[in-house]
Amino acid sequence: MNIRAVIHLAEEGGYWAEVPALPGCITEGDTIEEVTANLKDAIEGWLDVANERKIGHSTDQVVTDQIVEIAV
Image 1 (tube, rainbow, N blue to C red):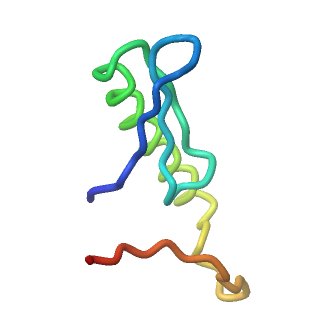
Image 2: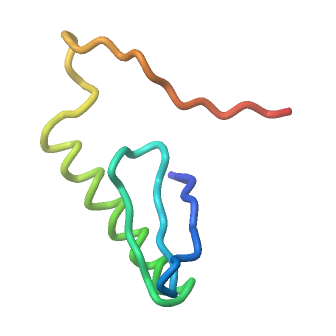
């Protein structure tokens, strides 16, 4: 599985990253290597919690927002 993340320069130094497809999935690191490793852990943790809570699997839930990838 490939998930897109956005890595930003942090004002205080180092980096912080977010995963737009996974709300609230953010992390930080002093180097690109560290923030990349932390991203993997953050994504795996987010997905584990979502699976335990069955986020997105409820038949009563109406999805109003979607993230799509469009080729141009």
